Length: 329
Image (cartoon, rainbow, N blue to C red; front, side, top):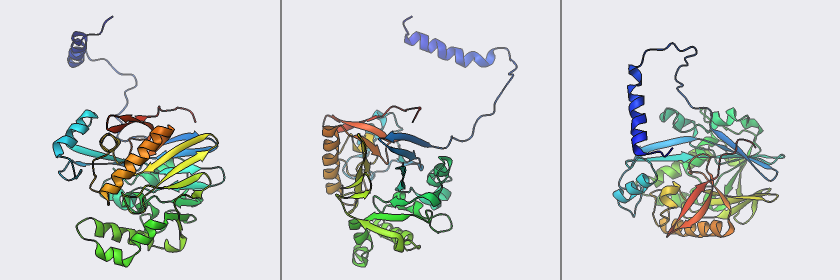
């Protein structure tokens, strides 16, 4: 039978009229659920198991300055094209737990318990979702940090301001560490945002973490199979990774783009949180040209959960095609 608009409208009318039908007794009525299931997703990469852990979603009104070099109505049109509300922005957060069999590695840590409390649970879910996925933070061997924005480092501490991963070595980009721990650089900061970014980084790392921190260099393996790649611009030490095991390989892009249907589709757009917007744009184009040419799968921290996909060229920009959900590991 050919489905037409008339059939669809007739079906809608039938649903609307349903309350007029005679009442029927339900044998097993169930109450409406009031929360989602814990949000985590696992996949295999060679001999490595990757678990994407949702830290939640931050939704806020689209303002005039979210994209610095595009008009608000252009951004709204891009949101609408992606079937998203045109007056709101929703940013997702997806830290990783990498189980190599010999090491348990956390890659970025989410917004932390303070954000969980202030957002009424919308973000800062990493700790609870990680526990639901069966991981004990005491068993984490290494925490690898891509850069020092709060949505990546605040989960290093728990609600009591003590170490969330008490037995883990914390590895940070050496360029990022040098920059954010430099008193001279901190004194230069002006405006509403950057002084707070510096203060938050100091707050996190001065809470008993400094002795556990090991700076790492670009172009070298941070852990077996985890190669650090320079993608500076978003921050001076912003780092991405190539995770390899056997014949499997995935590019963990950290914040090379934020929301892909905005900043992959429009790599020329400058997000307000890119510290050096021109450099961030160059890194975005260089990175995406590389992953397209090499046909690498990409894991995006701010991609829609679970954040794994492929990238292809699309006009002057790029399109991210989500990897299909796999019900088995």
